[in-house]
Length: 414
Image (cartoon, rainbow, N blue to C red):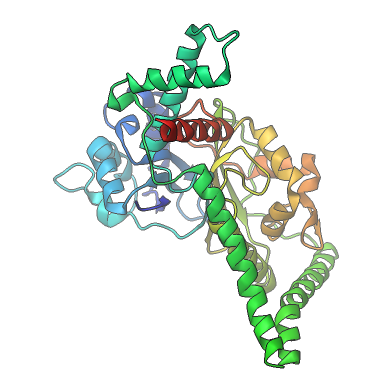
């Protein structure tokens, strides 16, 4: 099973088509549940999708950003988009430079979509949509059944036996299904990654000591920490230099935007920031994004980004001097930023390299810890999604994890 991945496409809007395109997208967003031109709810690959319009750069044209979070092969995903939304794609991208419609509605996106590379985090990696939907269905069936059962005085074993018997009597489509990925398996996978990382660091040093290359062994073990110290100290020098100079103008700054900020139990976030001038800031940002790639791919795989349990998907895109951040999350904008503020070190490592972010100290301190300044910065760089789709809009990450664990345990018992 191909892993869960993303599409991120940014297109220039033709001439003066921004107003008409915005009107089209806003109408589509308002009527997404009953749209006949695009039916995300019938797609089997799409977890989340969004369209939004970004401002132009240096007096350039406005830009249309399209993102999806999907599982499966790219061809299967494109086929899904074309089958259930081909006419909408042709209509929308008629306003974008370089798009050519074909005889089959939507086929033009096959050649047109050029995915941007990004750092990508997913709370439930490699989980197909059918997996999550089955877990939700099984959990809700079990809850409804237990509500009708007089469990008072019953032993847990008897309740479990009744529940198993109930699902054994269900047709196959309504029973707990077996999928390749489980939360238990993810825990073992995380443990393996930790062990492998430790061995890759310690074994070469041990081998060098064994063969009496003592200086080389010490250098191997110490150099990563020396590199970290040098980077932090150099970063502090850069911070002091910037504090003594006038702040550069922020081309990505805009008035605080509240439209589509809090639309329901789940929300979409897009922020656009500009990298601070100088090669060192760009180097620091790339190093921070590299660290984010490693942590997201190998260590943050149990439903939490660091200690934050509310993020379904997140990605960072570095494009020229711009840093684009996209996220699908549970709860309100304010609570979401408060979660980030509580884990400020990672936020500071990334956004401390952008114009307008609250000043950091030693790269990881202060910055987002100033929640009021952090929230003001987020609002002035926020861009609302005219279209936002979630395949399971009522279910927080932590609920989904509980449902998946319950379904997997029940499936093993059947």
